[in-house]
Structure formats: structure tokens, C-alpha cells
Image (tube, rainbow, N blue to C red; front, side, top):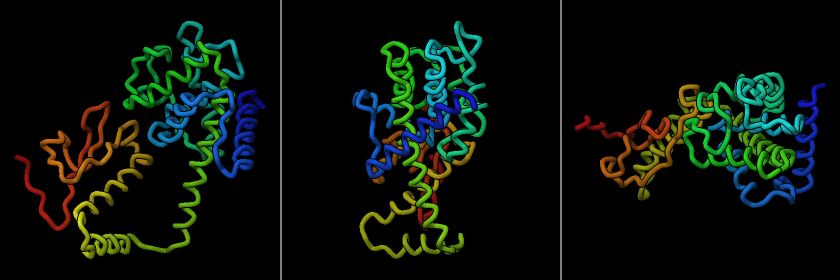
Length: 273
């Protein structure tokens, strides 16, 4: 058994035990400060949209434990003093994440374009990670390990706790749905009844919320939307011309509009001016 696999198994088991002993509440190591916890929470909470970032961090933390002398920011063997993070990920990390049904890439986190630059993951890394909060967390956590002697075991164990909770929450939701036999036609009929049968204020918002929920699912599962950002919904009363959005729903790529949806219910969409 490789050292990488031993470490993954050990810290995964430790994470499970902590959750079991704390009634499924994540318990950080006392050595972690609140800023570190917040950054790890950010990585976990956005892991479905930034699978590459999550995978690269898990790879980096694990390898730092295996080889404490390695600067894990030098993530390619072609970099000065570097190592092949992608090879370790492909051989050990992604297969482990798949086995445990945790958030994972299909092959490697380094296949994400914004993470494969031939440049060290230092604080001035210029890869286009299109979420400022994620990029800051990603680079700062690695910098903490290399310049502030943060313990990668503490980071990895806490991240595993968060990812286990996310996985288990999704599993419960799916299990509940599997007990109900419902066709697509029935879903559409229920939505139509919901849209047309409500007499409360704000019913025009309901179709937007339904389609937005569908987009949230597609962002996690459809390759077209990998590394894209689904923008939060804006006020339904704001005109697109004032909000600068391209529709009721908008997806960005590197902070530029990528796709938009204008949604009406039983009202023809007017042509653009």
C-alpha cells in the first residue's frame, strides 16, 4: 500500500470518527484558526463547482504529509524543485475520492485549464480561477503550509469532514426521491399547477426559481458548465438594462457572460431591441 493511500485512509477514518462523536458536526483541530476554517469551508461548500481546486488541494495536502520537504506549490516536475501533482492525483487521489463517493474529477484536477499553468501556486499565481474567494482560499492555504508551517493533516482531516457531510446529505436526498415513482410529465404538470394556481404576490418569480434550480444541478453535472459561474439571482423587478445582466439567469466564464436565460410564463418573450 502506498504512503499516499495510507494517509488518505487514516485521515478519512479520523474524519468519520470525529463526525460520529460530535453528532455530525465538523470539528476542526484546535490548532486551526477561524480564517483557516473559513477558507476550508469555502473550498468544501463550492467543491461541486470547483472540483479541480478541491482535488488539487487534497493532492497537495496528502503529498506534503508524505514528503514534508517538498514545496507543494511547485506542482509540476518541470518547475524548479517540482513534483508531478497530476501523476499522484491520477494514481492515488482521484481513485480514492471516487471510491468514497466524495467530490472528484473524472481523471485529474490538473485537467482544469485554470490550474495547469506552468507556474507555482504562489500568491501571485495568474491562473484564471473565476471566483475570487475560492482563488484566495486555494493559494492562501498552500502558502500557509509552506511559509507559516501549517499542518496539512489538520487541513485534510477537516476538509474530509465537510466533504463527507456534503456526500451524505446528497445521498439522503436521492434516497428519498428513489422511493417516489414520478414521470417527467408529472413533474411538468406539478410545476404548471404551481405556476398558474398560486394567487400570491410574486408568482412571476416561480418559473425563474424552477429553471434556476435546474441550472444548479446542470452546473455540477454537465461538462459545458465546468469552471463556469452561475450568478446569484437578482431582484425580479430590476430591468436587465439597469442590472447589466443578459437575462433572468446568467452564467459567466472568467467574469464574462457565457449564457443567459430570459424566462416568462405564458407571455411571449419580446425580440431584442
